[in-house]
Image 1 (cartoon, rainbow, N blue to C red):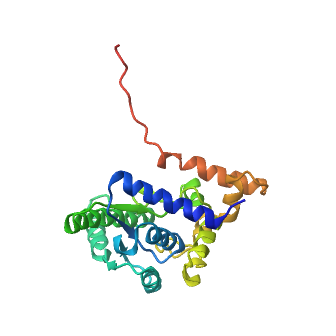
Image 2: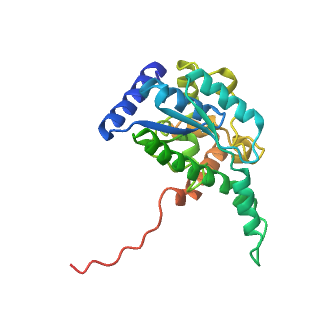
Image 3: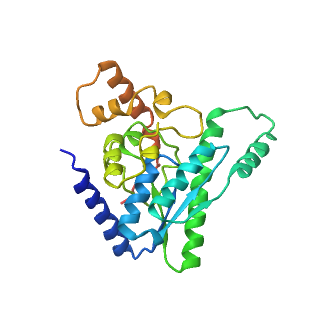
Length: 251
């Protein structure tokens, strides 16, 4: 039986132990305005203190509401929030790409470029603040177990981080921890979306997070839905492992 109070304390201890072992000083978190990044911020605030958190909003043709919700989270947990607008950077990339002789429009290229630019920005800031404050900052991941199971993330983008604290938690479990940490309901119960495509996560996936959790936990679920989820899991295997040639040993 999932106990949010116990699990919250275990995650907090996990963070504290890692920071102590690695002699780390702070964390940079991309605050999207959604529940996952909000819960991650709340956990780190409890574990290492708000003064050691740098929150970042990274708009790129984004909705104003997302920025407003991110501000709500930074105010709730009292950490500074930086706004680094990547719109012009993204537009420059698109403009340069269009100069390629055989350029073709690709929605996937455009959508996935944004989280990759965002992750570059987060690591840029982590190193900048490490120098500025004379202590080591790392980048926190914000993905949950359901997203990762079906590969709903961008390889080289939001898949990249230095520490993950939600990767073994389903969406429902993340929400329960958010309730334990008093994440504002406006953010915690917000319909999950990537903020990029204009669609909800579940619309894009064609399955619900509830059903994904059931498959992960081997609970009963409609066979057609189960097959669809397992196919998503299988098709995105390349996001988890990179085929690497190994030369034949001569010993």
